Length: 494
Image (cartoon, rainbow, N blue to C red; front, side, top):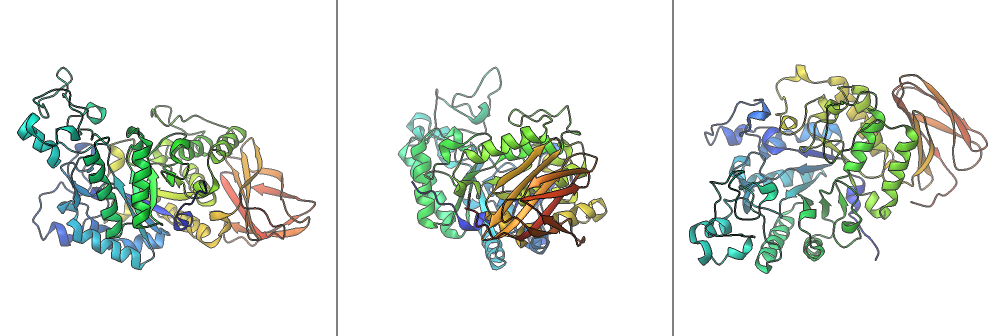
């Protein structure tokens, strides 16, 4: 099977937004007289702080200046939870977010700027407020929808369950508020496939799929792909799979996954000296690693998949399900900068979690879901924001960093270097994770003698001479070099 993934994704820089906490628009909150928690309330309190889709529209200039070309939104459909993973109407954008009209405006405004928008699809479970489940609550065994869920007894107990009296139906993590859908039921499948088709036809550019491995049925996702790609062949399908994902990345199910392997590998190498010893996550095995071990992890990960997949992977550092990357790495800004530059120079689409670019730092859920501090710019790390803008510009400027070949040149001690080539344009990228300068000689595949020009760090007019296929580099502490030039050796794309 020839594997095809959307071309636009390979050139995209994503920005993940948790809608309730990104930005409020007065067009919604004032017009409807909503009672909301104060903006910036401690996220552990829960509750709605009033971020909405028109608030995102109002901040598109900021996102465009950041270099963002695609948005990934956490769930936006009607829900009684601020995070909206408790869906009760899949065909209605939550009125608190502005409803369907606000999504229409966001899509139109984003698309006018060349930005794409993908939505979070929660198809493994719904809310106990979802109308078929409510129908069973009212009618019990007489409900025609009784087989839409996996029920272990009647009458249902959706509100009086506790640890000693568990709910009598399958629920995600045994949470009564999240009944699992019976996706083997043809009516459930038809309903969910129609949801997937409807919003792609509405204009979204793809789906990020929540816990898709818990729908343990390849035929479901194969049909899901057929439906989505039939509505838009360039729609992106990205699954939340935390580890190796060959099963889903054979060209018949997903285009990519949220690449958490990339995240923990990068933080383990670049943040190895400052990783928080008290941070434990069941799916992020963080521990200090040297360049050689780091290289083996990266090469193994890239070797698992077809290169059409590798170029489309969603390369994250953190998300709403983890602590923020800066916090994980002990608030070491230099470690975060190295991780971000690694994102911007590697195969796969970088994804920025909202607020990371201004230095937000916090432990995991719910703390990592705090409100973006608009109006409190004195709290922003302006130097870090400027760094992000330069790093995204570097990726946009050099096509080889997006879809070029990939070859490791050096991996020892604290130095990791690789080579990217596309249509004769080359980029040699070298990282030094140590606190001391590093001088190394690395191979520079291509014709024997040529000059490479320093593209990063910017502002330094330096050139390097390749002699006999090698070049000597002196890399400052906690820094990287990106050298560019023309390589007459036509390198086969990876």
